[in-house]
View 1 (cartoon, rainbow, N blue to C red):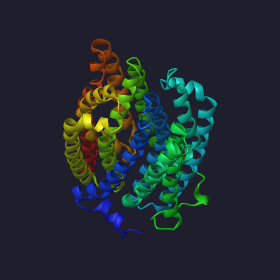
View 2: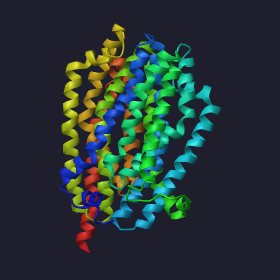
View 3: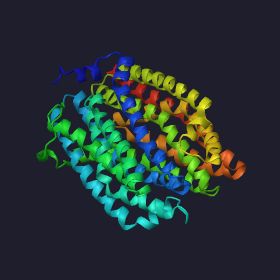
View 4: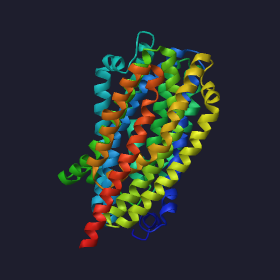
Length: 451
């Protein structure tokens, strides 16, 4: 097991090469996931119904909540698995991956039950009005029924990445996205199910995405061996998972909450504005998935080396990671600056939606040089089993800066001010995150040298 090439990548590969090897497959896979997010928007846009287009955007925070909960399991388990492999504790690593499967199943059942019971109040909370309520309700209902597929697709891929199987973890993403792309026009137009059909196609795609990692484990191609006998968690493992996982969940929930605030503010400017911001948000996924992919690839590298107490390698990895992410984001930023109207025009024939969407996209693109450093810092703290630092970054980012700035700048400058709240937030948080990260790792290095 210790001679496996995946372990070599985690422990000894040159920093820049290790970051690329672990992160690039995830970025490529997440670009496919961008299509997953855009495909519903694209085909719904072809219905020439801006209210259904707005409904897809309004329902998106619900998906974020599901991802938040699965992120709790996936991040908590992945952190413990990577640290256990670094410390050569393979028994704990195998038990943890087994617990991850069991927790995902239980959590998804709770999400489905709670969501369906409180569906109407939930749709209102998402920001739907009388013009978008029924469409948002239809989409949300189907997504809730398929919560296990959505959460499993996300979590199981994380479990594979924790052992260095980054390339294999994207197979499910690609298979699920292709399925969704093929089925969307069938359900939306062929069966005339419109927005409900888009949701059904998404759920089926997620089922395929969740099955692929399961098959990989069943065929025993992974380093770890999940087992039903090991699925009952010990108090120690459960504590470790939730210690890292709960703050990760709260981070995503706070992000979803900020998105709900933004949607409600945007709703005051009309459904066309909501639709335009939704398209812009989906296009921003191209930039978001770059930093998320590299940060996700960086996490097992940092966790393994933290478990092995190789702090100098951690410093080299984080520097390489930030350089790679920032360079890639600047390329995406340039593309948005030049082609914003043309990109928005792909998804709608409404001139006003194109105009507003281009303005929003050209404002949002300024977050891209900053968010990579923030994501890398948070991923490193989670990998180290120090979620309090990652969570503090998110609390300050969302509650102290972003949401108050949204409200303040909207109140003073209106829509034009509101859309600049996030770029200002990310610039401040990049500086704060890096100062905190390098300070914490330097402390470990000094303590080790003093022994």
